Image (cartoon, rainbow, N blue to C red; front, side):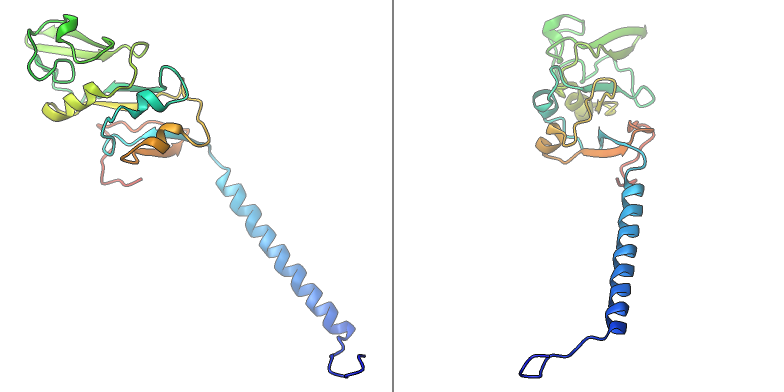
Length: 195
């Protein structure tokens, strides 16, 4: 005891009770942390672009750590109008409706136009040529059905912990999805289903 006599002595019983309480508290906390970590480490997540938030700003072409970008344009054929004058393929006022380079909107010629039957054309993307500039996406959304949109292609993506395109995305269109369902198909996914 101290000379002033104002310190309280702790009995063995109190010491044992407080020790058990502390051990219980730490044990429960550790169990909760372990279970939370186990749940979070379930299915791996991958990066993807929400096609309804994307504004096709061009950052996908310039900010990806890969060259060319892992982002590519895709066409949702169920939404496509198979237009003769596709504004994703042609500029708004083309010189002529033919496949000449001067008449194409895509700077690399990645969008391929193929006659189905007059006046319908199918548009496919040569992913090896696509640089994800988004020019075709903007054109298709402005005057067409919006069937052209950008998606992260997971056969190319490195799935960086912090995606450099996601950081630079002005519309915050990048989302994390389960690896088992890595794509947002525009004709199946509705913007009301918030991610």
